[in-house]
Amino acid sequence: MNEEQRSHLLHSSSLFSPPEGVKLSYGTAGFRADASILRSTVYRVGILAALRSFKTQSVVGLMITASHNKVSDNGVKIVDPGGGMLSQEWEPFADQLAIAQTPEALLSLITEFVEKEKIPFDGVLSLVLLGRDTRPSGASLLEAAVEGINSIFGAIALDLGILTTPQLHWMVRARNKGMPATELAYFEQISSSFRCLVDLIPNETERNKTDNTVVVDGADGVGGEKLEVLKSMLTGLVIEVRNTGKGGGLLNDGVGADYVQKEKVAPRGFGSNDVGIRCASLDGDADRLVYFTVPTNSSSKIDLVDGDKILSLFAVFIKEQLSILTKEVKENTNNNSQARLGVVQTAYANGSSTDYLKQLGLEVIFTPTGVKHLHEKAAQFDIGIYFEANGHGTILFSESWLSWLEARNNELSLVSEGSEQQKAALRLLSVSNLINQAVGDALSCLLLVEAILQHKGWSIQKWNELYQDLPSRQLKVKVVDRTAVTTTNAETIAVSPPGIQEAIDAETAKYPKGRCFIRPSGTEDVIRVYAEASTQEAADSLADSVAKIVDRFLGFGSSNQ
Ligand SMILES: CC(=O)N[C@H]1[C@@H](OP(=O)(O)O)O[C@H](CO)[C@@H](O)[C@@H]1O
Ligand SMILES: [Mg+2]
Image (cartoon, rainbow, N blue to C red; front, side, top):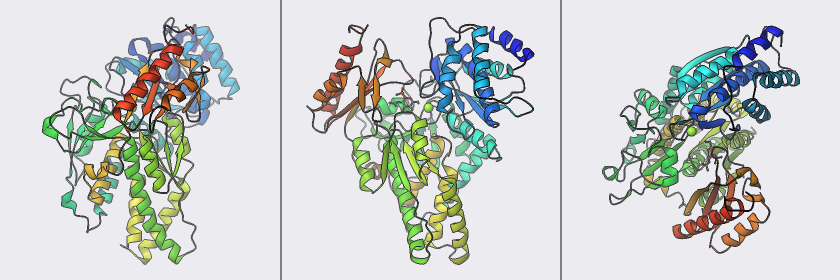
């Protein structure tokens, strides 16, 4: 870096001092905190994004959101060129940047890093696409990000305004593939592939049996707003959006997928008038989706249809279409077409869902929490389906398998246009266009769920009966230092503090079908406890006892203080 660049950086960073006494880290979803302390962090992530773009010689993204967290929080994360999360190798550098106390310290970190990573600056591209959710703090944080990007000579910031997180991921990926990357292109792609799937519904399906109306809770955030636009482009589906953010409701306040999934109650605006109706809920940045029904008008409790069940529905459909397609291939050619279909879950997946998926004959793999881990594993299959129980997930198709599928479809359209096999090929191609290949996307998942339910002629109740969830309970425990807990085996076993896993095991053994694990949250300053057992009372009691164990080992009254 030349002298001019160095002094520009020193000056620019002197306007963004880090908050005192706060140590933020680039967790499962980037940096997140109370919005009032985030300006310097966001500025620095702007610098990081510009460097990432120079390094990869590609377009990257920067998203300002705190997803399902409360409206006064905000956050920032980088989207890598492929549309996925920032490479994990760069996360430690993000942490160091965020805590550098002075402009000089910041400059020396950057200089060192640029040399170590051999980041090229001369005459090459650096473009960062920026998006933000509807939080009021978003506009000023976005300015800080732009300042950060502009502090690196040659880097260009392009503000795309208010977007869902998955839209930004999609646009970064599309742009790097040389495809149209506008919001309109996004809406057109997902609405037209939905239409293809609906057009391919078998005639024998009693279409009228499925109600084609779904009522969606928009969490009073960006998802509700975007769904209003998308719904006008759809045929064959009626979407009623509530909690759009326009009616004065507060973002994520008693609404949204996280609330619905964790509390298992109906969001604001849903109740006794909705008994039996198919309802869905998005989170604050529309990268999570859950479904639910209100079973009776006597309580606010709901029947939750979570991410595990969305995964199962997708798996059933994909497996079915693959078997139609490859049956033909096996009979007529030697083509090595057998797609490797795999499923990726985390320890939060309901035990019944895993049993069900294994019964279907699928390969099920577990990873630690956080999309980046799931995504990476799913990408190793020809078709990899991943979901977190909370409703974040997608289906990834490998490039090589998609090329095979396209060729096969062309072949079939010549020799047996309109055959069952060709329809299966077309359906799989449509799924690959509909479903976001970059990241979990509530809007595209909603359309895929709706298309599959129509295809199968299933009600939400029928779908929910694929298997019955084991009762579960999740709790959070505040501790002195959550980093004292380290885990292994996809987070199912606590390695430290010593003795805690033995205590958890002893407690779990008391409960039939008991399963319990703890882990430090990557987005909140808490230890999470998850328990499953044969009855709700037992799951509650197991979670409670283990929360007490956590408190005994690590709480404010413990000797670790
Ligand atoms: C139990 C749970 O729901 N954890 C969530 C939550 O992470 P934590 O690391 O548990 O705070 O937020 C992540 C980002 O949205 C999401 O990927 C993850 O699944
Ligand atoms: Mg989210």
